[in-house]
Length: 153
Image (cartoon, rainbow, N blue to C red; front, side, top):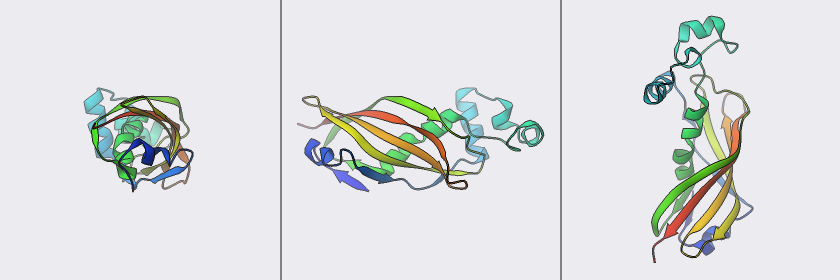
């Protein structure tokens, strides 16, 4: 895990890999809970019997947005930013879904610091992320996540 306490320490990682998160399983239970939370009960995610027969994957798949929703958790496994007043998720750019995550597969995130800007009192970071699937070694999602950090004065 990378630990930073200031803009200068953070900026030292610009253009470099920050790290890799731990693997996390996207179980059918997690998929079902996400479906309940978002009211997205499309059969390909929650109907295991129908998915065995009708899905091109032979089973259910995780929602793409469930996979993306794991970014903050995995990000916090990669970096610890101290001396913060607050941090805000600013958005995701250039996001592409490359391959679905099958129920029961595990994902992790690999990130590098693409760009960091000092905004006088805050810093804005663009972090290139790739979410990988353990069982296939392939990408599930790739994009650039933007975070804004406000350090204590």
